[in-house]
Amino acid sequence: DSVAEMRDMLRGARRIVGFTGAGISTECGVPDFRSPGSPWLKFAPIEYGEFVSSPAARQEAWRRKFAMDDIYGHAAPGRGHRAMAHLVGVGRMSAIVTQNIDGLHQASGVAPSRIIELHGNGTYARCLECGLRHELADIRTRFEASGEPPMCVSCGGIVKSATISFGQAMPEREMLRAQAVAMDCDVFLVVGSSLVVHPAATLPLIARQSGARLIILNRDPTPLDEAASLVVNADIGDALEPLAQLN
Ligand code: OAD
Ligand code: ZN
Image 1 (cartoon, rainbow, N blue to C red):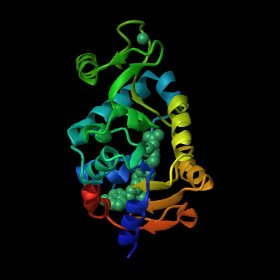
Image 2: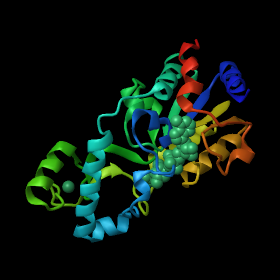
Image 3: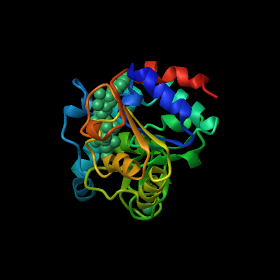
């Protein structure tokens, strides 16, 4: 079957790049974006332009952020994260490019230098003006005390969760690094992404054009299935767990 075929391909690979989306974290209790029942489908996302121009939008964004954190802020890595951490540890996976903001690859013990976060990180915040890092616990205390979206303690600028919103520029350095690793792998392994959000979803094609085999491991079909060497429609935890034994 396709799961066995995937494991064979991965066993034979020397330089795998992993590319993850929200599907790797669903078994950890973190909902994905586009599966039926996702809390993200209930509201239109607050776009970057609204966030910076409207205090009311910022207030709503922080309210949603802290409500979500109450639900999954304490999630722990799952079987998929652990298997990928193992592949990095034994030197088979050179990098993990992730669209996720949950920090679970770091939590699974992967060296930060091997993780490329395309959409930022939701476990802290930054000032959009001066770049100062703000801890969420502080921001939350101030937000809950005043009801107002907190401003930077250093420069008075707008503080935002360190994630990339729709309408916000991609982090340039991360995008360049992701392109570089995609061009330099023998297998590009997509794990749990619908592959509909660009430019992230162009990376599998860059890998393919550079000669890598493309494996897509996802429960549902994706627009790039046609371009893949192998499509595996299976549960991520079940499919990847045995790879934690690979040496
Ligand atoms: P999506 O929610 O679009 O896709 C997640 C995919 O994971 C779906 O196609 C599911 O079929 C699959 N899936 C979920 N649980 C699974 C499981 N246990 N086993 C196998 N497959 C499973 O999430 P992303 O592709 O990550 O962007 O979304 C991409 C971007 O859209 C996100 O990074 C975010 C969002 O808007 C920003 O916030 C900028
Ligand atoms: Zn500042």
